[in-house]
Image 1: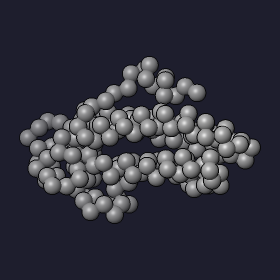
Image 2: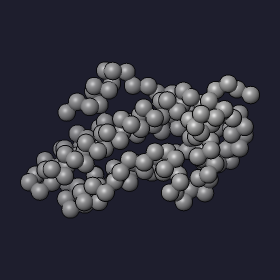
Image 3: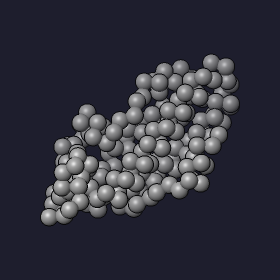
Amino acid sequence: MSESRGVDGKFRLTRTYRLLVRGTNINATSLLATDYLNHFNEVVMVLEMVPDMPEIIEEALEWKPASYIEHFAASVFSDKELAIWAYKNAPKEYIDSFEELVAALDTLIQRAITELSQIVETAGEEELRAKVEEHMKGIRELQERIGGVINGTVFRLDQKQIDLLFSP
């Protein structure tokens, strides 16, 4: 048995879970499921509609970050229990990269929601569209990187990338 410990402090059973996830939507390399991206896709779609429907910002204001486990615990995903167990046994390099990127994306989305909600009443459609696009650049990049990690590629952000993502 491996000496590597999972996110819950127990020994990881990575090889076992790689066998168990075959034929599911859970990646056998990272042991993560792309369904988690739906948590972000929904709020991103809402934010993209703000220039055309400013009142929809109210829906975005209800969005809250959810961890991978929280997302699947509340999900209708058919393999949600397996997704949670596999996550707890995923290779550390994927979990570390994944969690770093998710934290950055949570921050960018919350910033976008806050800024858009502050200007939605006073800004015109073009100003809102420009502001949404400004936010979407970093959000989309992080979504792609998280998808990459889920699909088996380890991405890490260096300080320069972090600074660029969080610059106005």
